[in-house]
Image 1 (cartoon, protein in one colour):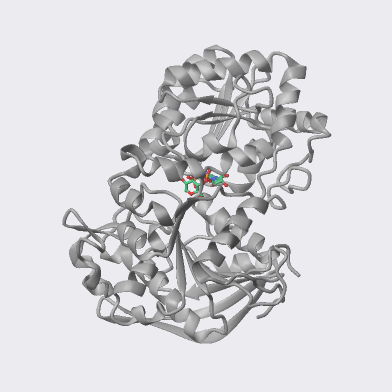
Image 2: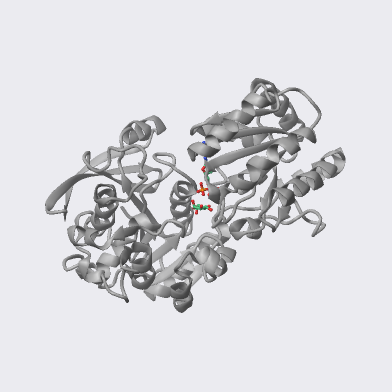
Length: 500
Ligand code: ADP
Ligand code: GLC
């Protein structure tokens, strides 16, 4: 009998399709979700597997991680832009977690994964992944009930299941779930890009047509059997004009199949008591160890050793993340005694502004531009506060990690931030600081509220402890996905025996 109390019945099989999966390839939180959700689902008796590209360096990472890797000796062929592209299929596994890696040197050699311009060349890797994933179910011994698609880059799978002259044959009993991680990216293309990827039959008002262009996310909203967002609040926000970004009317008319399911964290990986990136491990019962690590790290980072709090920030430097209101808030906050430690990359304008601040206030602000997994862990494990003043935030994983590592979040009350943070001054059980108005002024006032509490060590310790004790694992959310899969497949019970 499995954790859902099911015995017997057919095992529920789900194939997750994603252009990124941690720790093999990662741009943001999507990669974390695609690694950790299928693992949580397997724990619940679902045979959940992943298909993702083998970019340059991925095989080395698989080997470094000690995962099993085998060539299935199966070939995938998909015809795109009047050319047949062939890929090798590899099977990587860690314990019972199975990942199909698609090796196609011409399409998947680019390490940046997403390109600035979605021209036809930039579209082909995503089209290949989307269509090859359907083909995969024909050639490997894994016949899923559900194909679970993540964001615009995989939206072509369910568009093809409805409108592609060849791939529509996969529709049959296969059900599709389309998860919106970020509606800002909709896969907007000139209509003439559809013919080369075989999706021209989808170009009409009840398909992908969108003000004369092709909008892939529109097609996935219409074509999928269920839509999810990565937090409940975001599922409501995208039905309004701001977060809806032009698709709110369409989403409202499909709200009957829309559900907001909060992301979880892989609490084994994000665990401050075992994290190898942190020199002095700690947990909620050994906060003095955290304090030791904080002193060590603050010194290493070159920050001066004053009394004020250290605010951490790890993330993509884009307007979504509230950089427009954060950067003007830094000078006044430094004058109030705050210090900052930034890790991120993105918009050259924001990078330049941060660099300038670092030059202006050595010892008060440390900026590292780029992607650095280990440094990110150390920032979570040493900052007093963690700032996320996002303009919009579909879920956000950084605030969950910060909470688990004892850094108190200061965030804008939007999307998943609103769902996961309770304000200290709004609720006696609170463990973070929220503000609504999108302005530097509100952000500064909120930081000053936090500073007042920080000055009272026992109150501060209590706030940290409350946050660290929150459970943001996948337990509840994975169950919600299981229920959704069952609803759309009609599989009421499913067995927990494993198969390969
Ligand atoms: P998003 O997916 O919108 O970027 P999330 O909060 O969901 O935001 O997830 C961000 C993830 O990426 C977190 O795991 C965070 O630690 C990680 N991350 C973001 N930027 C960096 C960076 N420069 N170096 C290391 N990790 C980063
Ligand atoms: C997107 C969103 C982020 C979310 C992540 C994982 O990148 O911007 O809020 O946490 O996807 O779902």
